[in-house]
Image 1 (spheres, one colour):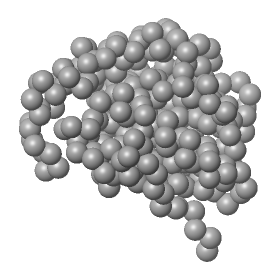
Image 2 (spheres, rainbow, N blue to C red):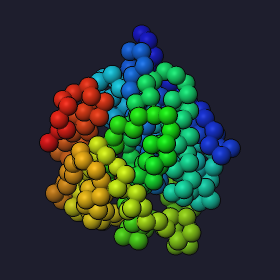
Image 3 (tube, rainbow, N blue to C red):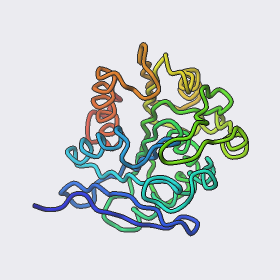
Length: 253
């Protein structure tokens, strides 16, 4: 059986980053590149779901670990910032496109801070020799000062984080950059107690048409509701097909 998942390594400012490229069994498919959340990885649930769905629908998907996360080089507490993650994301896109195994048609996926990364990278992506076709964003903050319940406690993978870490590395307001987005589908739970749903509404109001906002009633930041998860799978897949003109020309409603 022909292999569809390929381990990939690439450099971003000297850091060796690792990811997985999922390729459908067709020549030169369109490409989606994903960016995980603050403390997530390439193996986060939504990225694994998309890897399966996209390949089945003849779209390539690349998921990778940002520096300081997962299997990639770096230290989380010293190598994490929105700017650095944006650099990683652009390097990931460029590396995969340079492989020559996909089309130059690109859509992006980002969850939480990964969504912020996609928004922050958008202008640069537009300047590259690539057709930016659209985006799917989940629970993405555009104004870091709105974030609640900052994760300062230690975890199994990192020590405790001082508030100074967030003030130095994760203080941003990228709301103005949302005006450059187009073909964007936005998911957010109205009971998100980490990133307020106001961020989603701000992105939606500034993005260009076509665009769609899906607010999950009583939905949390992690999208733990199975009903919400199923809707995410269906609507995100339909949106990506629309972005690449492989489905209906009219955006899904």
